[in-house]
Length: 228
Image (cartoon, rainbow, N blue to C red; front, side):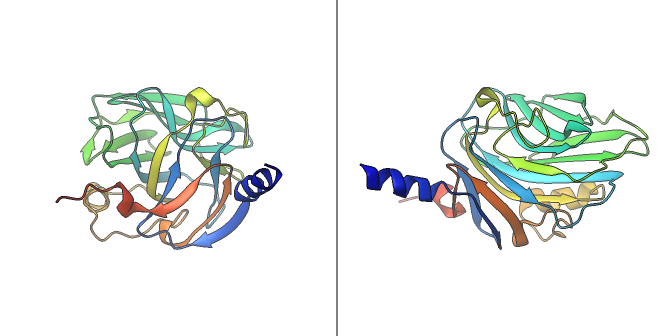
């Protein structure tokens, strides 16, 4: 029994590494208020324009966090939050826009992109290639300070204060972040799996990350149905 506890402790140890995660995914097997992945951005700068894209696979119907970026001045600096099926929220510097009618499905890969331009304040979400209406939020602001970017949990403080009821359960892959607003054509390429310019803030093909707790890196192929 003691040996089992030691082995489990070693499995759950925090490790920092950089990997090419092409064809791989983070699997979050259980809900919790601890298990998460901390992402290290390629650059830390004041951002006036932002785009984040990712793919999620889950059967959870409750609310859950898809992408959580906190700043010293705002725990919800840039948060993509799925409240329930077809209902998403985008938080920027503590303010929020709600987007209705964005169709997603359980137990398949759903592609989600969020964009924001501080000059106009216009934000937009894209789910499986379908755009939301454009909504204004925090015009004239910027994302300033060293960010803490977390997958699997929603930050209610700078780097912590997680809630089990908001944790992500399922798989995440192809996480990219840019300091620009992607065009509709670029988002279409991402959604369809075509060629696109990887993120210059977060690049899934060269990602530095730290796993905390029960998170597994595995091949994305395990999520595909195989015909016989």
